[in-house]
Amino acid sequence: MADTKAGERADPAKLRGRYERIAAQLAELFAKVDDPTARMASAAALLSAKMPHFFWTGFYRLVDGELLVGPYQGSLACMRLERGKGVCWAAVNRAEPVLVPDVHAFEGHIACDPRS
Image (cartoon, rainbow, N blue to C red; front, side):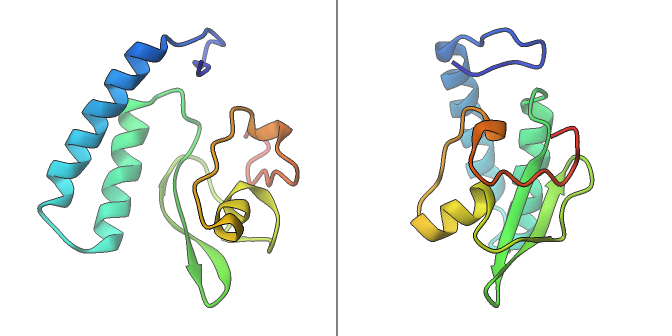
């Protein structure tokens, strides 16, 4: 189960319903524009608003072999992520999403903000 800000456990059924509603909202928004930057900005804003227990929501873009910060909501982000470290690089290297229940326990976690 996912942790909430207060450290309580969230009900998986409620989370599933929330995720389904967010996915439907994103589909409606994405139908209005094809621009990837607009879509990323809208997704980050919606997730930040609907998932208040998330510390940071956003994207890193793979540009010329580097992961550079893209649209996001939250505290100041690292402009460039050190190659091969952290969750984002793990996702790039595996060519698939990486779900991490506790980012602090992830080998090579990059903390761009000391609170994260």
